[in-house]
Image 1 (spheres, helix red, strand yellow):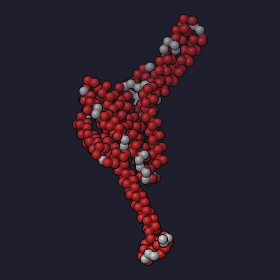
Image 2: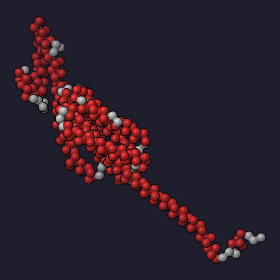
Image 3: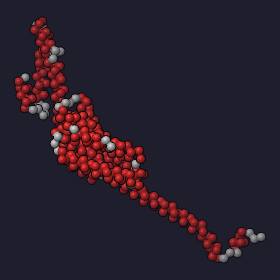
Image 4: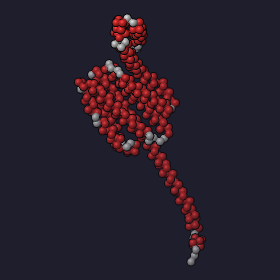
Length: 334
């Protein structure tokens, strides 16, 4: 019986060459297949990156239109004006949401980018939109409608920003990932600025400012500062320069007067409280009463001290920004 080596030697040259080349050929096929699979994965990931960024832009469009409707709704509730603009904006919002729903439900890549329950929760929230609009249109519940609409639109945009954040985490290409993170930070700034402007308008319309109002406004300002730091961390040099040269100036100009007026009113409130304390029964009135009854130098000195403090406060009050002619006239009487 021949050995395997003898059997191999009895074969033709072609067989021997084929056998010798078989292993390298199999290795070459394996390496080629691995390379093709790797390239396919890279291509799929690149397509997913592009699709994700496109979703971020679509989500931004939806958030932008909801923010515009929030602002116009607040203006309509306050004055019952701009109804035509509000109706037009509602149509734009509906169109953006309809397109977004279609992409979320039918797009194959959306199933990879988003968790199913996240999309369901967003759609469930937006089912309340018609009811909120009906409340806005009812003039007799203006104050409650203003509160409910602000809360609803802010919550809807918070959900959209969350979806954008989830989208950003799926972008793997370095340059596109940094661009996506910068965009997300910028959208966060825009939303907080819109909320701040809306709440400031609400406080001015009602004529009421409080410590809670100050805390809320400071919260919005702080969030904008944090997001601005994130933006500059991820933005390209060109994008950062464009923001400083154009967007920052416009945002600062649009919010500065609101903030200054709000802070002025908060200062007025603070100084009025101090005046009440100095003029009230624990202050000048009390010390003057004791001086009249007892004639003591201590009561007279306390009264004079209170008087000096009141005069100083009135001068500070007069110097505050946003003082009306009527307020100045009353101060002159005092």
